[in-house]
Amino acid sequence: MLKAIAIDDEPLPLDLLQEFCSQTDFICLEKTFTKVSEAQKYLRKFPVDLIFLDVQMPKLSGIEFYKSLEQEVMVIFTTAHSQYAVEGFDLNAIDFLLKPFSFDRFLVAVSKANEFNNYQLKKENSDIQNLYVRSNYSLYKIPVTDILYIESFADYLDIHFADNKKITTRMSLKNIIEKLPQKEFMRVHRSFVVPLKRIEKVYKKTIRIAAKEIPIGTNFEADFFARFQT
Image (cartoon, rainbow, N blue to C red; front, side):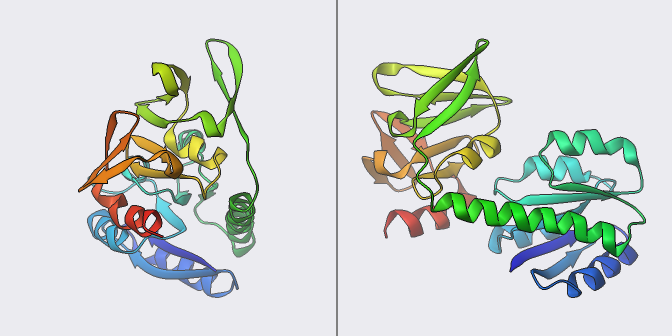
């Protein structure tokens, strides 16, 4: 069952989403929000799998809100304006629903989310040995066991190895973590992904890997210590 929330500054679309979700057997719409600030507070305490997110909202757009999220979460954008679709898909949105949308169109979108979630669960149990990334017009095959940690800089990542070596690639942390074995790697900060087996020491909210000190982000702290101590 996918845990979901919906955010829209108008109550009618939220009522429709609630009705449509109740007609599926794989989505639980746990809460709806008309204010982004309230949704942000909720997500800090209760992570979800999927967000139905209106693009046009006061103060902070849906796209800006999604970019600000530190958690890995699927998103289906909703809007009355089709010109936002390209930007939405650039953010790897699961789908883009143009208002007003039918139940059949809604079902297509949420089925994609369900299929992607099932794929992720299968991948967690698979043995991923190599990561493929592009850098300087070349494709690199990287054994995942060689990675010390991954650091994000805007639209680019530095993949660090022993002996101060690294590969820089144009990719987001959200994208690369989807390609890594979920049991072995974890996002611990908005700018860092680490392999759990490489951690040498944890002191308070700092991880040490090969002389590198990596901070543990507040939004990732509970999940990290739950996994690291088991």
